Image (cartoon, rainbow, N blue to C red):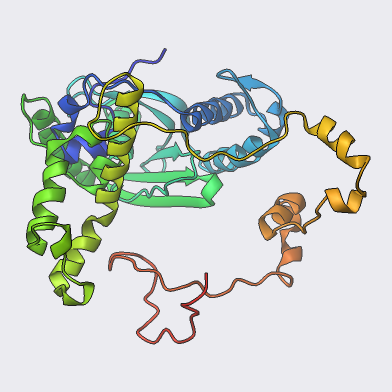
Length: 378
């Protein structure tokens, strides 16, 4: 079993922004998930192919970390392998790096490090196999810690002047790149050292926020996040109970912005509270006024082949089987990248419905006139 640092690089978005989260998470078990296990297999496949100079497709059917690799994973991971191999220099894969000069007992494992002495460039490349949340390279705390660790470990190998960070998410068709100087990385080093020291102090401050709360195990029981929902929002709206909630058209611009700024965080907190309460009741504890009931389920065949046999004696095949044409995504998968151009004249992408987004969103605004959009239909 791999060792994990108390102040891990992967958790740096959380503990750097909310130092109190480190002690808050103590006692919570890391339950893992199917997605995490899948990611572990993808990383093991990538490491094997890079170290042995073989294609991912040649590994189809092989088992890594207890899971068998299918063709889909091979195709996605190959995109990461090709990207890593496109850079010249000294390559290191699944490399443990030491960033303890800035983070107490800090270490981590970088997916790929490439040191190009000729261009004086250090590359830190991170594979994200998940497809739930898009991750960007710019200001990525985890990758910057890996870069600090790489310079700490390999500083004598080359005179590094530039640091290039890349996040590769093949299942989202997303590669994000960001380049900084060593001087800029040193500025981050000073910041992260200060935050790490704060995180190690007793009764460190808890600071709720989207990034730090997203994956925090203590989110459901965090008093700071609870106070945010109770104090910041409700007092700003100046309501006493649910019946006195103001009408939407009576809210000020600042109140609307406050609600929108905190919507995702509050919804995430409520979801965590529900999950935590469910776990507590399953564990035999009592949550006053709540109980667990059987949710809605969908009927299914006990034995589909047997059901097919019985019903085929009474009905025609056309009654029992419904045929639908493949989707664009399914057709792309059938064709593969080399033949994907065939779809260009067959596919159109309708204009998306207006979607509210923060001003920092990189997409251009659609303007005030949205008469071209169908706002009545989904």
